Length: 205
Image (cartoon, rainbow, N blue to C red; front, side, top):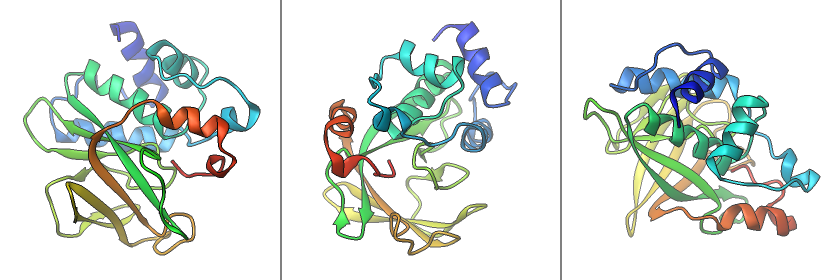
């Protein structure tokens, strides 16, 4: 991502800081993204092509000022963070619903390590309703956030459950306040499934 695109992206989310050198910068960017770039899956319903290529992501979210679903929003956010000097890992996640855990790779989340060596942080600007700020990935105590109280719990096999233990959507039907992230790197299967599976059309991530 070149400097001009970075500046355009920062303008899109209303931020002028041009470095994620520490946790404070990451927190500011995460909250700004949550407040300005909406979750939306209109492209899926309209049958529009979904591309995770950098040019297409930036064109949709930054140039055309659209929103997107998890792979688009977190994918674009990861590109911005990397351009600003952070180390980012893209990880697969599964969302809890009424029937339990959704399918593998149903959601995309990010593990971020800013340039100051802090973290790792679990960042997610693509869930639609989640924490305003990134969560400490290695913390297991409650983490208070303007959007509620969150807790990360080990779930075995390298997975981590993300629980909202207090807040407006705790226990909601939408995702039961929970999703699970895995250590597996996310691939490109989810966007293709979104376009072809009716069951995926209303998925939150």
